[in-house]
Length: 39
Image 1 (tube, rainbow, N blue to C red):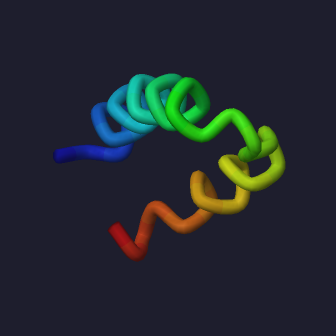
Image 2: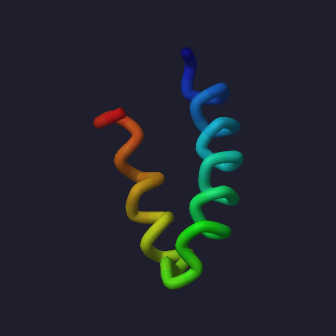
């Protein structure tokens, strides 16, 4: 899986997470987005 594919999947997952956990902010999700090397 390359970085572009991973970013596309992250955007899809991020939308689902925001629906399930409305208390999360965009900043919370941006922090996790920066951790792609840990995935």
